[in-house]
Length: 439
Image (cartoon, rainbow, N blue to C red):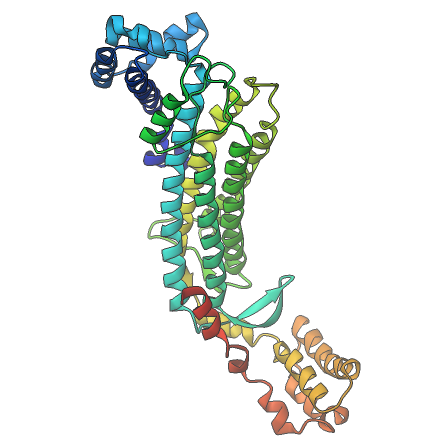
């Protein structure tokens, strides 16, 4: 992953140093179990821990060995033997490379999940704070991008809050599903290594034994993991897209924080562009893209092949690092988001009261007018206002048109019509929504 979209704690999980340290711990924990079972001397297991644990693995040297032997695990074991000495012959007893590789990947993905869950908590805190701040800030709700009926900006944010509560649960489930251990030998039959070794290693690393691990951990687990990340990334894009629309010049109800000294355009000094949320949209595309090859990794040949390996070397780091960066960036955007309640009110008033059309229609039906007739009466009084507003011409308001329509006033008196244009009516259940979301 390129440094531009990387954060150090997540990147460290995928460093060669971290990987080799996990490989060592898998081998050393296995040696402990083998020693308890009497397969290898207990002193050998102690030596492996002491000398291997103190070792500083030379990544360049391991890479050099791999260029010769063309096998990454053998290269590591060869290097490890330089530290452990003669007792190194007891390392990797009855194990196969995938026991190390797949168990290590499980540890890395579990650690990555912990960071992503913490990232989501940070975003949830930001969304909750801003939602409560704007619980009663009226704004126009839009469907198809067109003014519909009033809502509040807090309700918008509360919706995103519960979406990321679901995202957090998806990450928790994904973490649980991916956190399995395989120490089962060449084709997963435990012929050369006792199942109790797997149980010991799994417990030591905070994993569960994989019920059937052929020679690899089944890749449907990994597919579910990366698919979960893709859904979370789509939620990131959902919020980012809303902010991008709200920042458009014609709307300008909210915008990204624009810092002192920031430049929006190399050509136009006046520009304040939604670059962070546009960036998040692009990053979400990448995280979704990593899900597809993970899905294709499920169908391996027989007990295993390595068609999945090259894929996971890329998508493991890239998907988790990218989503980690995106969640943190989005939390920062929400925390610093500049909100313009006055502009929201101005936009609410933009269509001369048309946003109350449904309430007028329903009131007519309550007075005995057939729904089809009520719709026709309201629409014929709404369309002239729509046309005048969209052509920049001054015209009568929606309420004035209704008051002048004899068929309408036959059912609704002028003061009754005026009462139907109360903004507070649309917001009377905001408290109920917030109680559902925040308790």
